[in-house]
Image 1 (cartoon, rainbow, N blue to C red):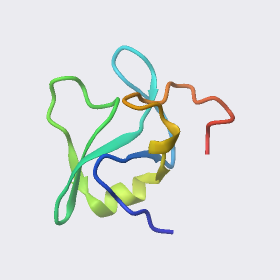
Image 2: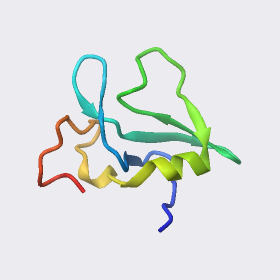
Image 3: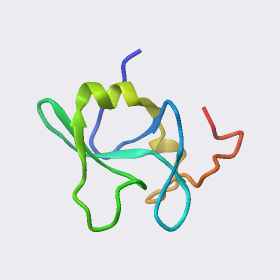
Image 4: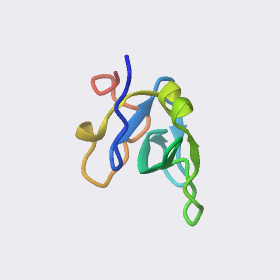
Length: 88
């Protein structure tokens, strides 16, 4: 199974963990830029004021389980722990 990467979409990890500075959120990642061979992303694990990290597309696809954009409230991250009915 291959995931189609798109700018502005949010993806959940295969092994979801807590992340965030002031509250606990799932370690989801939202793509901000896609280059020729890299993906740049934002997420709860990226501290405020820091540059968005970028990794190779292959590594991002290995990390990602599925697209969760439509499951999240607009402009918000998934709180941790994820309720049993919301986890996939």
